[in-house]
Amino acid sequence: MAKVKPKGTVNNRMRVLLAERRMSIKDFAEAAGLHYTTANRFCRYNRVNVDLDIAAIACETLGVEIGDIFVYTPEDELTPASP
Image (cartoon, rainbow, N blue to C red; front, side, top):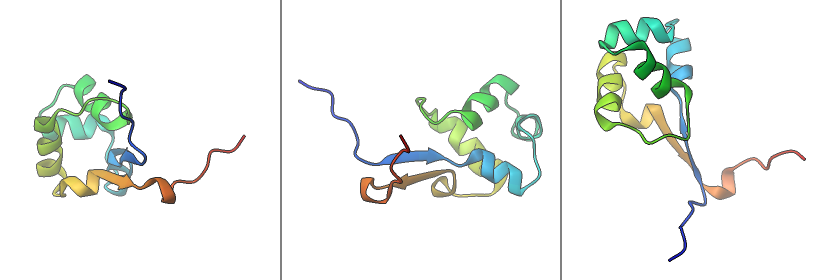
């Protein structure tokens, strides 16, 4: 069976949320009680499997909902890549 690929994309907005709070990844890691490497991977990369426990800790630490961190953009709203 062929691998099914999504037509839209899910974007991780952690860096935006941290910038709005003037927090570094190190600040977030310390506030959340996470190892820096774990926090860094969660905040910086879009194309990784997400640990839902880490996502829950991020929501609790920043006082946000999961939909504030991860935003789905349907295919028809995506901006085409420039050549």
